[in-house]
Length: 176
Image (cartoon, helix red, strand yellow):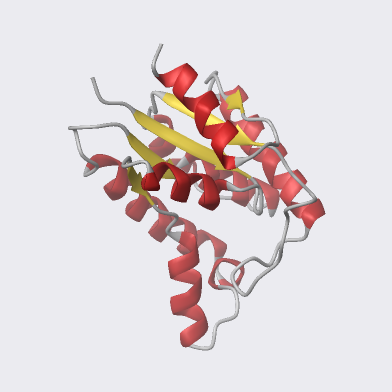
């Protein structure tokens, strides 16, 4: 039986490197959408598309992530670099008021396993698409954790260790 597995956490915690490692092992991986949207906005002269209009951006992102989730393969395990619930967490991080439709849409999405990567100052880096500071990354991690607590969804914290060790831990859990 195939499983839909989420890799989540605040910015700069090693999610993308973990996804790349899983992909090298032959797993189907769905990549983060935000970076692509941000880079498209930057080409149009908008430094941070999410910050310009968080609600509009979040609605567009929700539609794209839902499509990504629904159209993922049913033939093997699929790993997602971020999911729908983080959209609500990021709006909470900005202390934005938003329509509960976004939250209700996210409640309908169920992953078989959710792995969260904790803040890790030693590997954290800013780049052209990542505007958040390390302190912001910690706050976002807490908001993501809070969303899953609110939804009563179990999350598995992956320790700060090598990609190989993180993948080994994932295997132990998803293979049982």
